[in-house]
Image (cartoon, rainbow, N blue to C red; front, side, top):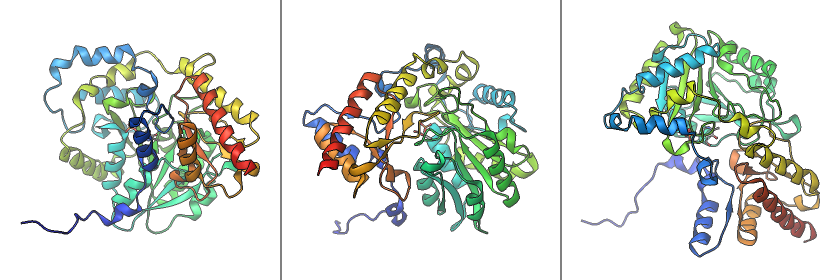
Length: 408
Ligand code: PLP
């Protein structure tokens, strides 16, 4: 029997946006299908820009391929979890044991799981603005409410602890930190992290710390992990193979639960249950985890002068400095720059419309700044993954499009 009613979808989806792969990306696919050649800077996908996962990680999977057919334990392969526990213990993360190490299909799955294990309807989560928008989406889809604390451009995209504390209510359950930050490239100093941890401790809030770019650092920036600062206070640290190890297609991430066991036991059991419901993470990728955590450093050289990421970042910084239409807080970490449009080109500027125009007229795909849950519309994000000369060409095109706006 047929019905004329369209399928209904979950109502709260109308509150969720993920423009990195949204309408603009769909338009880009259509243009490509029609034969246009685009420069797509919307996704931090190293493999799409010619990066490869380190050979010793590939080897670890190939050598174990015969073992990858069965499900693993729901929390992940014991050897991978032991290697992760040892790595985080060596970083002075307190109270780490294998039972508090969760391996997921990317950090993405674990972000969702960690909020699902935490939130009751109406609970609030303090989320940075700008954010990596999965944090907002996962909060909303798990019946919570993101409450944004500003990481303002005129404060080098650093949060203001006093503002964070002022936003705490009786419904607040957690503080999300993204450090090094996507989309801004900010790297938070230790003193700032100490103040935020103190707020979490005062108000009994779980720290949800997304450190997926923990080793992607430029110009001597120092990364400070939060878990050692948090000590006995409950904290989950997220990272994985996608960025530092350039293997995002393998879909392997981890979450490390730290804090006094007497305080984290119930939450750990909730994560265990949710992990079991999705059976296990991609097994082949898990065989690369021990190789990644115990093997040689392969990212620092890319971020140092002469390295590909460093030189592309330099191209962006120089292009923005040379442009009368752009301003940039130079990124100190991660894989993105978040420039602001200034001057006559910024009059009546609509970041979404600009991104669409740039795509149609200049064959470049960027992400409008407002996709990252900010109230202003004069920023955009590009990934730093292309070759430096491609990036120089991108900024010639962006400047040309902005000059047209300034003259209009
Ligand atoms: N967190 C941040 C800040 C990210 O930028 C990304 C991906 O871009 C993720 C999490 C998700 O990473 P994955 O699911 O590939 O581990």
